[in-house]
Image (cartoon, protein in one colour):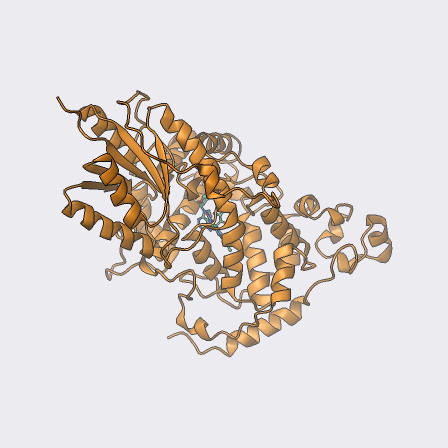
Length: 487
Ligand code: FAD
């Protein structure tokens, strides 16, 4: 009797064994056919329409693939690593292994969809069965439409329609650990050879300290959040000085945990009371992630082109020196600088502070939102092709459901409101550590004696504000009013 050929399982942004429909189907089929399963990850940056991954995400991906390899080893499934265009790599693996069945979970970027569609047609024509599933979203972008049959542009009606569907999507259990038939040996790249880890310099020490990539790390973070912060989430989620949010975003980025798992665990933790303030507010944030994917799918140019077309003509004043000061956390606005340094050191920034740093850059400093989006793309461990551009467009006022352009955050008032004791600033901007709370968000207003006692010399130990708040605000509003009104 001849052994049936091995099955192939393609991991993409779904690096987990639990609630992974492609993995579950592949393991079930391999068990049924008494055959082996070969998993692979293809690092594909060859197509010009594929956006190269940023540095922080590369670091994360290295760790995440290592963790996935260990998860799969328990099943006796090898994880093969290949680099190059998927259109070449995948057919070549099919030929090398003789596989007749391939499993994957769907992706939502236009370039990825084009690759997957062409591959599916090519392989099907060669008699290879391709099965695709949904691991990443509660509600896929084509599942909900407005009353007029169009994609949603505004979050609230989107969520009103999508939430009842989301609430009914139970996660799949992880297949019981069992050793499958031994897979034939297939050549694999060495992960280290992909060069995802920074060496000269090794800037990743803060990332290593802050995160445990992999599905086990994701589950641990979820449990910790549900036990300690879910209840108070609605009241404390805007406080960057408190550990009040889940920190699940980088785990979600590569699918080390899925939104159905988070939803179900939240439901369990609050004993089915999802409409209570904490759980309601938390699941709504998952809804914003869903909405971002809805936008990305229906507006594929979201990372580069404003959704509101009149913003194409916005008179940005791109300036390298200004951008660099912002990137380095040297704007002279403490809450902004704290956020930019938290980002640099840990690869993550609190959501409220992301809004503040974005607003200062785009509005007071008139830098194009794409410059901020790119910096986040390179430095965030959760840099996401949907949430990052959608959020930048929201901040800039040119997005679908954006804050109106004329609503300009005041970083001093916001700092005083959301970091009332200044602890967040003290943690990330050590040169202000000894400033009293009354002046920590506006050191330029502090009396000379207070500055001296805190060891602060404005313009020497810490910068003076890079722009006056009312000057920047007036300039931004004038630029906005010069735009032609929306059609
Ligand atoms: P929690 O408050 O615990 O929320 C749970 C989950 O909900 C998050 O992990 C995330 O997946 C989702 N979520 C929460 N808020 C949002 C939101 N506003 N939009 C979309 N999803 C949300 N999020 C990313 O995942 N990747 C990005 O690249 C990204 N870039 C951003 C850029 C800007 C300018 C802004 C203002 C926001 C951005 N966000 C991005 C959204 C948000 O800041 C992060 O998702 C959140 O801070 C992650 O922290 P958390 O996991 O503790 O969130």
